[in-house]
Amino acid sequence: MASQPPANALPLMYNELTPLSTQAHANWKTRTTEDAPFLAKVHAVPILIDEFISAQRFFPIVFSLGDAPVPLALMGLNEGVNVFVNDKGVLLNPTYVPAYLRRYPFMLARVDQSGDSLSLCFDPSSNLVGEYDEGRPLFDGDKPSEATEGIMKFCEEFEMGAQRTNAFMEELGKTGLLIDGEVSLQLNDQTQPSIYRGFKMVDEAKFRELKGDALRKMNQNGILPLITAHLFSLAMTRDIYLRQIEQGKGPAPLPMAAQPETANA
Image 1 (cartoon, one colour):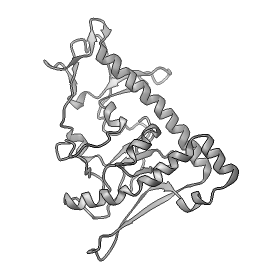
Image 2: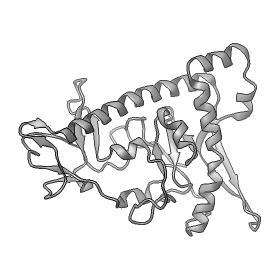
Image 3: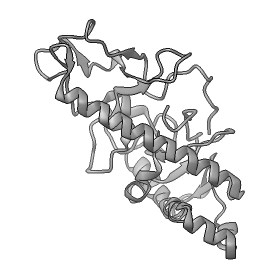
Image 4: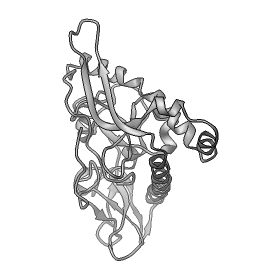
């Protein structure tokens, strides 16, 4: 499906990262928009384990390739295809919106690579933050505004969720259940199936064979319901496939995924 980006690559969707500053951005505002054209070409979005139960009703949840896989919500089976939005990035139907998307264009990032502290940063190319006439002010004098405090809290919660997700992935890796995935989809009038690869998934057959202490441990550490949600979500692959056909965006079996390197990237 795809290769891992270089270690210094910016996170998915982010073109730039600028630290929010009372000096440089004193009169700036943040605004919302229904249009998100950048999202129209995003087919795989990082997802936190906290979201598995809600997201599995809408998206297949798979895991990226590489030595440090992360959970991904598939919004399309083909690279550059998102069946949940139109060309302007407007949602076509009510759906669950992953926290990664709700966080954009903000995120916590380490400005000083030699330090441990994280600063609130934003993507200035998003056109969701700037010196606008309308919107929510980012600062109230020399202090963060109520809007900025809310953004900071959401980003902090996202970081904590990312840490839990990374811990889950470490535990999942130890189980030996992750395998290279493959999905074969075919409609009645198609002579050949469309086969998608390039992701990881839990080996359902091996998962069913778990017994005793191994199964008990997964239940105690909370892994069991997350694996179950992942496996249930794979049924949504056919729904995505049908949407691509209806929208004229498939079913050519092209590679699926662009992978961020970490859950909080």
